[in-house]
Image 1 (cartoon, rainbow, N blue to C red):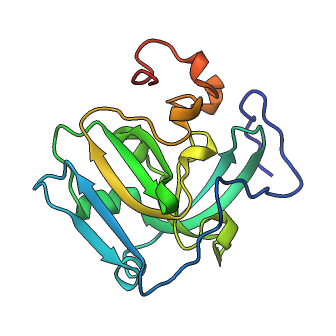
Image 2 (cartoon, helix red, strand yellow):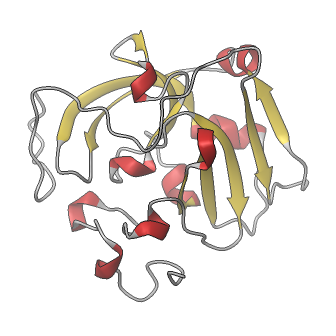
Length: 200
């Protein structure tokens, strides 16, 4: 088990709960694709089919996973495609400051481009050497270890480059825009000026 301290208010559970909004989507490889669009460098759209995405270079990371519901899973081994690889293949315009990561059924989460490109952030396909379980995001989930888990979007289908921040699904419904577990940024009422766009 990790010797690292836990963020404030967190505990280590016996099992990993599967928490999500809405039903678990069915994976259809022949229909699946991943798109990158918005303010790309050439203003075009990029797209990978499942075989194309599955053939991209892979990385392995080990990191703690912090859920806003207060559990932390220590030292989780992930493998998948680094977000840096994706951005090299689909370069953003210099003016891009944030991304909005989209999933099945219109779910989304926003973050700063620097958070998206952190060293250990990846589009994971495997956990502990096995393909992700459907309820944990199969075939692809984003993993952003330094933010609360709702930013680690399950069932990823698209990345949108933004030149200004825009709140995602839970950020519009009362969760903190930044989501730093070490600062316990759980809810929007905790936000300071500059933490995010106004709630509407």
